[in-house]
Amino acid sequence: MEVAVIPNLDKRDADAYTRQIIALLRQNGAVPLVHGKHRGRYTDVVFCESHEEMIARCSFVIAVGGDGTIIHTAKHASVGGKPILGVNLGRLGFLAGIEKDELPRIQKLLAGGYTTKRRMMLEITVRGADGERTYRALNDAVVSGAQSKIFDFGLSVDGSEMYRFRADGLILATPTGSTAYSLSAGGPVVDPETECMIFTPICPHSLFNRSTVFSADKVLTVSADNDYLGDIYLTVDGDTPIRIHRSDAISVCRSSYYTELIKMDDRNFYDIVNRKIIHSRG
Image (cartoon, rainbow, N blue to C red):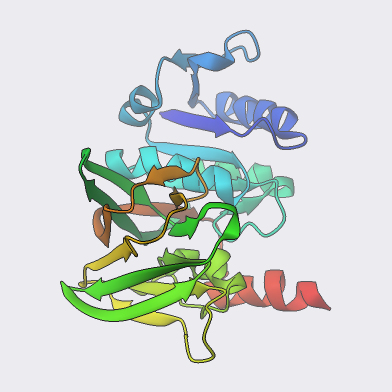
């Protein structure tokens, strides 16, 4: 069995935990696959020249880091239909299957003792004078003006205009992303096994603007006011912001790809919310 190991080495102690995982895999007869950029750092592994090669070869992926690491890994793993075990080295770790002190559970994983949960993803398409660009998100897509400037934008549903807003920006999130930026901006917590899209304005300039939940079958299209002179940016799952022209239209719909997350116990989403959000405030 070959297992892809994708660490976020910017995380404290990630290197040490990655070495432990590699050793556990070898001790249990599995072959660790590691990206070639880590040559010289790890031994007793098989190096691959791209994430695509790793995903094509592996049975599943172990992502070592926090939720951000798992989200980044999902962009590759979802295309190949490979499940991800997240090892949480961060704080919340909503998407992780095990904590950093639970590494021995990897032996159970190799023996097939796990379940998977399928998570909906978004497909984001930017259409404009430069052509068409497509992105994929597990958490959210954020549209905002430069330097937190206020701008007017429209939101249409299946081609029929429904909203016009003045705000600092907007968030279009999956149920998985409902506990991330959308929650901080006043959006609802949504069970991640539900399929829907959540629209949440950022600092709206109205007393009556609220977060709205749409069916996953809808196509949401965002357009900026053409009189707005500042820069507009699209940020997908926290990656580098993408410059958007005022004449561009951003369409968001349910992706045909899904992320499969490995779970090693019977803790459900509500247990995690209770433990990591509610009790953490006490």
